[in-house]
Length: 364
Ligand SMILES: Cc1cc2nc3c(=O)[nH]c(=O)nc-3n(C[C@H](O)[C@H](O)[C@H](O)COP(=O)(O)OP(=O)(O)OC[C@H]3O[C@@H](n4cnc5c(N)ncnc54)[C@H](O)[C@@H]3O)c2cc1C
Image (cartoon, rainbow, N blue to C red; front, side, top):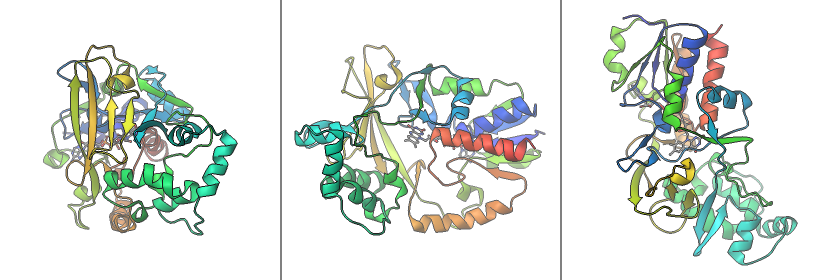
């Protein structure tokens, strides 16, 4: 069978590139997806009780990229959702990321923004060369806040000490000296009004797009003719693990439904120091669904299972560089997305990268 393009993977990367090829170039695209649904990691669905859940963990859309926001807005309306997170520390629920409110509540103080800046400076450790995630926190806020909020959470999340992982991981979490308790400060934030899956379905409505679900691309690829392949699956698998398997951190998701309207005070509560799970999400507080029951999710990070987070260590970056050298030699294959590029991508960044690939390579 012949298509102009074959896309492997129906996550946001694959769907965006397929939508552009089909819509703008008016070309025939086949998307091959090994799961039984589209959306990849952003997939959401109604559980047995009828509560809308995010099957692969809570997803909050946030961006400063207007083009990406406008692009996705063609496929969904948004609820103006401003994400908030609390952290359970020393028996208190305090705002996360760390703000004036966090310090005041934790230490029973009444500091102003300026005073909190001095408070952080007083405890900050002088580190001449910031090399690790631990250094990032110590040089901003010092030992005590590092231990209370970051050290154990990172150990649970990664199975590694923050001193072993590069600066990028903790640098993603802001530390603020103002009273802004929103989790993200981006200009555009929201939750697709009818869910991510609905948004994704709208992206592939073009009759130029055919979908093959429940199929690993290797089962069918030799039977297909196409001009180019866009690959969004794991690159080590594409190359039959010739440079070894890339390591990922995975998560075991444990959902529970309760016969009550509300379970916790915020959409997400982090547990840096207590329990084996890292955080609890209550979906109704993300989706604004009205329902007399509520579903929560506990996340237990582990090293086996579905690949979620690439490992942020020098060793794995070096290993992936070998794959990258192979990728650069390909002429008919484009690699796109979090698995193919072995990097952490937020949703907006993955859509941006697909739009750029389309403009720079495919539309020309
Ligand atoms: C727990 C978690 C929470 C997150 N929360 C947020 C958030 O709040 N905000 C945010 O902006 N981002 C968040 N993200 C990031 C977001 O999920 C990603 O940016 C986005 O989903 C990446 O899309 P993708 O298409 O690159 O990858 P994926 O969504 O993983 O899609 C890849 C697809 O390829 C398919 N595939 C793989 N191998 C094959 C094969 N051999 N044959 C056929 N198909 C194959 C997979 O089944 C999958 O459907 C989160 C990620 C995780 C893991």
